[in-house]
Each structure stands twice: as C-alpha cells, then as structure tokens.
Length: 276
Image (cartoon, rainbow, N blue to C red):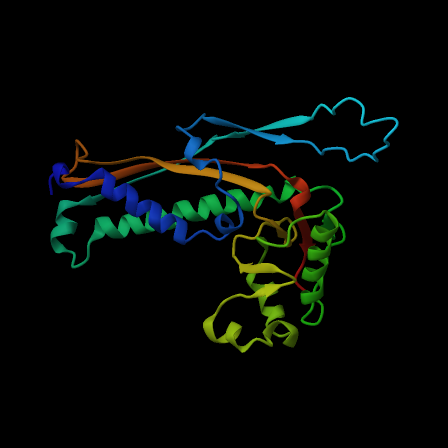
C-alpha cells in the first residue's frame, strides 16, 4: 500500500470524531476557546469582569462618580502533547481479514480519550476550599441509603455559590453508581433503567466513569460542578502516514495537543469518598 493512497484530512477527521465520542469528563467542560489555539505552547487570555456595585439613589446627593470596573485575566495554556506511532507489516496486511490500520486508528483514539479524560479529572484540585465534603483523612463512606443524599449535598454547595442550575454535572465511579441504583429515589423513573441513561439528581446530570480520580488509600474524588467552571481546548495537530525506511510496512503517527484551565473554582464541589 503506497503512502500516496492516504488522505491525511480524512484520517484526522475520523480521529477527532472517535475521540469526542469516548470522552466522559470532556462532556462536563466547555470548549469556548478551542478555536483560538494554534498548537502546543499556544496561550489564550480569558478576561472576566468584576461585580457592579448597586447603590441606593438619593435625589439630593446624586449618584456620584461612576464605578471603575475591575477585570481579571486567566491564561489557558496548551501545554499537553500526546502522540501515537504504529506500523502494520505488509505481510500482516496481506494475511489479515480485517483492516488493521483502521483498527489501529480506533485504538489510538480510545487511548487519547483516556489520557485526556484523566487529565481533566485531575482538576478536582482546583476546587474552592470551602466546597468540599470529606477529606483524605476523613472520607465519606456512602451506603445504598446515603449515596443519593451525598450528591444532593454537593448540589446544595453549588446552590450556595450561586452556580446556575443548567449544565450542572457530577461524575461518579462505577461502585458509587451501583449504590445509587439500589435507591428507589434514583430508579423511580423506569426510563432510566430501560435505556441505560445514567440519570440526574438535583438538576445535575450524573455520569459514570472509571477515570474518577482514585488517590492513595482508594479515596475517590467525586467532582460536581457547572460546565463553565473548566475550559478545555484541544486539537489533532498532525496525522501522517509514511513508509518506515527499514521495514516493509505502512505506519501512521499522530499528535494531539490540548490544555485546560479552571476559570471558576466556585463552580466546582468535590467529595472524597471510600468504598464501604
């Protein structure tokens, strides 16, 4: 198979599609600034405006001088770069009854999705100090009768921080989800069980993931929050097909660059939990 038979634009589009379908934490962040990146090392300046003071009007005193608005700036840096590079021998291609190169692309997309998922999950450390339930020293140990209530408590923390109710989420590990489905408050909607949709609690979309951060001592970091809290940007920077000089084979290599920034720590709430 000659390298000229490859069309890089088609491979790149296919990789992007598979990548996004297999993300979990990628569903709970925003990509508002993704179109502004130009490769590894790129930075995006994110501006925000402070609160406007509301005063009491006095006809005699007037309203005084106008308030000068405060502004803050945060930087989203594209500081992550991950690659894949695999080859398929010509003999293997001739003997195989499946498309090995296409299969390799699918596996590469899963691998990249997993790496990015874990990267985004690690942003639990950016949570506002007061927005936590449990600690590494005293983790919560939920049961089938309390797991639901703890997620409601995370939602209350978001309420107290004036976090909008739309686009809220919480990501739980499989064992925690197992406790939820034993609670009739969670499973009362039969459609949830029939379609396999994970469901919602207190206006939070519930996601299940095996990439929930698991720190030393099997302490899981369950993140709840609003989609605007973390901004993520990533792109397939390069996909190339080539013939390795010392082999009779076709090879494909690709590069994915990405980065993320927590721009609203108050929009996150984190619970540290252990299995019972």
